[in-house]
Image 1 (cartoon, rainbow, N blue to C red):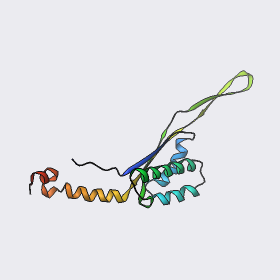
Image 2: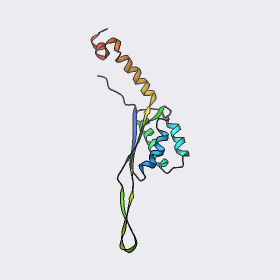
Image 3: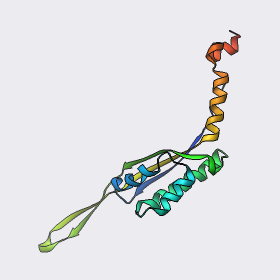
Image 4: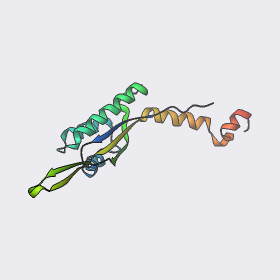
Length: 145
């Protein structure tokens, strides 16, 4: 039986106190870039969302080096997504005994990093095992040519 080796590691941040729209502005700049380039971009951007995203990218790279035994120079940001979280609702007292609702939006951020050296290695293995000219995987087992 062939087991598929993981080539991705991810980090998830939930209930981060910022608008999903403001965080997407930063995420769109780093999607698909290398790990080292992403860290430089996030350090130099002037937005508040950069700090939270920087910590998640750093955590995803640490997860990849631990679980995949990969080098940080081979990592790219394969998936970066933002989802809206729950809104923290508060009441602010106003004049004449009335209250005014305040909604503080939260968001969930998912960052996935992929090791491109492992991905290239796995495609070479899959091409040799699942070769169509030899009848695919079962052709290798049954000896079909």
